[in-house]
Image (cartoon, rainbow, N blue to C red; front, side):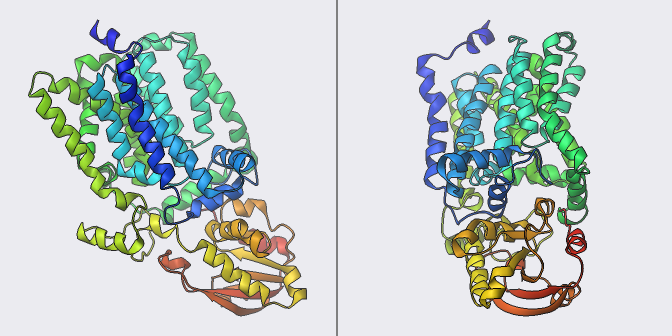
Amino acid sequence: MENERQVGPPARSDLATRWALPFAVFAFFAATARGYGVFRDELYYIVCGRHLAWGYVEHPPMVAAVAAAVRALFGESWVALRIVSAAAFAATVLLVGDTARVLGGGRFGRCLAQALAATAPVYLSIFSIYSMNALDILVWAGLARIMAAVLGGGDPRLWLAFGGLAGAGLLTKIDVGLLGTGLAVGIVVSRRFDLLRNRWIWIGGAVAGVLFAPHVFWQVSHGFPTREFVANAQQGKIARLSPLGFVGAQLMLVGPVAFLLGFAGMAWLLVARRAGRFRALGWAALVVLAVFALSISKPYYYSPAWTILFPAAGVAVEAWSVGRFERVVRVAASVLVLAILVAAPLAKPLISEDHYVRYAAALGITPGSDENQRLGRLQQFFADMHGWEDMAKTVAKVAAALPPEDRAKACFYGQNYGEAGAIDYFGPGLGLPPAMSGHNSYWLWGPGKCTGEIVLIFGGNRDDHLRNFASVDPGGEFHCIDCMPYENDRTIWIARGLKVPLADAWAGSKHYE
């Protein structure tokens, strides 16, 4: 009977605690949205929004569709897109607390779950920019909330909402399918066959499948580019970790206290008598962890699953502390959770670059990356927020120095989607043509109106370019402070006279990674 009272409508006195932290999160992230500048991937997503389709080489269509909607409403602005991420973070924190409530948590359990989500360094990073990862975490939080309600005996027609959100989630990031697999395993292992005998679970699954079908058809019609992209990334781009190393990396992503509490929450879901009805959620989190840990994956891939573990952690700590120095335990837990905020400037741009370097050094932190890349003084996440507008301005100077007849024919080619995205975002105001690149979806979009007579190529080796062009001469040099080293000190080549058919040259430029 206690659980039934707790999962009913919240009392008015609880509304303030329910909404206070989500509102504070939104206000803070909106106020600090600009950070160090536009992020590499944000430029790409904005351009994807100009090329609406049911899929892209490395992601489904939702992130581009939202970017296009924001452009239609507010104009093309990466800052406006970050407000979307701020709202997604606030909603995630709210849902995490609500899930804790459905699991049987009281006020403290719900607030602790919210605090764990609001202070996790990986969330401070992901939600500080616009990306599919921010939307993906929100989707997982929503699915966890619905699933908890169904497992707890809620209306089985909630499976329709689950299917609809899962379908939208699959159109955001396909890892939602892994959550579905984990839940299916959890339902079977925890012997919740009553759920499988209900027609609504199958109807919900069908809804998800129908919503996801257009992207599947897109993948088929384009030769499954995402499969090729993932294989290439796993082979050469992603830094390999052992299973234990992957699990250990979670400690840095959420902080030591949240790490311990989160896995305590998983244990609570898996073994606690009080959590018997919700056992499938614990198995889902464990299955997802096992799949990522046993494959070549970046540690942050597991970040959406913490929206399951944080609510369980809040309820577990609350339940354990009853009658055991309750006030002392709860105060200590709150203080320890909030202590991770000392790492906030390492996760989200909050202080100047110079202050960041000194602050990180004082904490004994060195720049890091999930990829096999050489780093400068900033970690890759921060370095990828530097240099893009200056790069476009440097290219514009090279273009402006061309004879008028050459300038009218000039095209731009970038080695990756960040360089091409910078030209497409900043270039129109600088008089530059649309960008080309063989990287990911840029390759699918083709060379456009470029004839190959005059091409400004950012970086690369002159001898390699001479294989395709009659002449290749340096037009300028790009230098940047605190950008990724592989973007710094790059020559802008003026290539003239394509020697091979454009179609052949374009086919050879394909690079999915």
